[in-house]
Image 1 (spheres, rainbow, N blue to C red):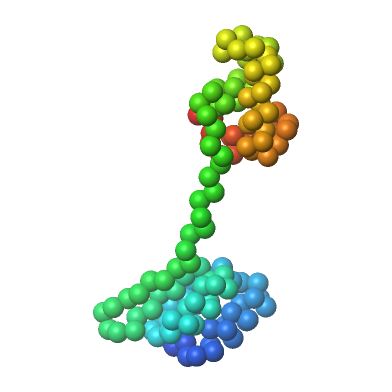
Image 2 (cartoon, rainbow, N blue to C red; image 1 turned 45 degrees about the vertical axis):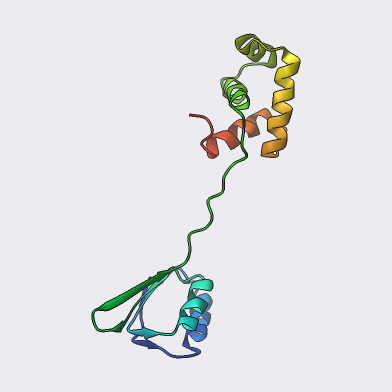
Length: 137
């Protein structure tokens, strides 16, 4: 939704935000000639996506909410990623050990460490986590 408001005076941001919330329409962009910093902060903090203001002729200011921080997955070692790739291929601990020249007990140890890092003990959930976080290429 695009909102066109000629001017936002003190307190107008709060009233506008209240109306938007009542209509469940905070996914909006505001176009205005004049708006105070405080009003823009209130609107952007309340969920409005962005604002474009033109306070002086020929000058346009574009304001937006900061992007959410990029959530990074846990740091897995190259060996842990290799084990996880083979788990994704459906191999057992013994088969993974044979492929990587490790004992099945060492593979189990790697899986336990991966499990702690990603927060799950289920092999399928570990693989799903790796796929969602683009850890397997």
